[in-house]
Length: 421
Image (cartoon, rainbow, N blue to C red):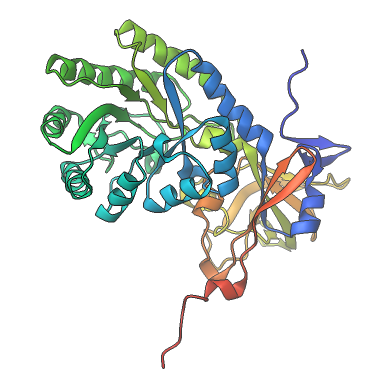
């Protein structure tokens, strides 16, 4: 059986997304532009769904990775739920036509107004991260005359061996409830009249490339489930979170089926196989599905380094500057010329404005470059620093191209501002 063609591949030397050359997209929509493959998103979600077939389960896409309405629409049609961290993300779920009853609300800083809106939308569950938040949910539910479904996000103090900025399951992190404080919080929640305890939640970080930390966290989580059940507090679901890595360079993360299979086996062995399981993947769904398309403006030879100065910048893709992240950079059209070593940088007035360092490329002014693996935490973290309009976004579906976000105009950047009288 022939393996499926990668979403991004070369045809006659030209880099394409599905059946569309990226050069055609740049000519039509300009640069910088984010380009997403619908087929890649659907295939990534299907890998999770297939691994959970026959089980009571829900995959809740962690939409902070990429919250474009078209991405949410594609996933909702595939049956996805959503993991949100703000009222704005809930509004996007609803605007995309998705079912809010498949939404879990995470995040350490929910406001009472956000909680009230989520209650009105009848979301599946609030993932509580503090005693204060439990009290806020109880007050909001009482005011609305409802019962709020809740779980507790446990901080299991498990080290996922990832970048410190994206590690979320250690005692020093702001996320979740300390392991030793979990049982008292559940007892308190179970006694409240406007709260219904339905689950338990854990998320230990992002870019995790090994199953072992997940299993360690799962065992700690299941110890709590056992303790709760001994006290008469039964749970209907267990949420194992997300965080599975993707291949940016030479990483070899396990496929979703391997991770899910190991966790389900542990669940069965511990006697909890009948419970509904939730997963919250983000990066592994959309990361490989996107590229940032950019054009070389200037080739600059420096005293110690050579630079390709492109029209994308750290405001478009902050991962390299923020996380020292390695992103694969490929020419859209292959050039028959000697390659040189360049730093790929943007025009923003910061020394930290770089997209790739020390890459061997054959390029000249006017050439197009594609930054691969940019579908997650690219556009969702973009800013207007240096008064730069954010990029356009397009989605490719076979041989069709849809503009799913128009490029911002400069005038839009200050449309809500005013001078003094």
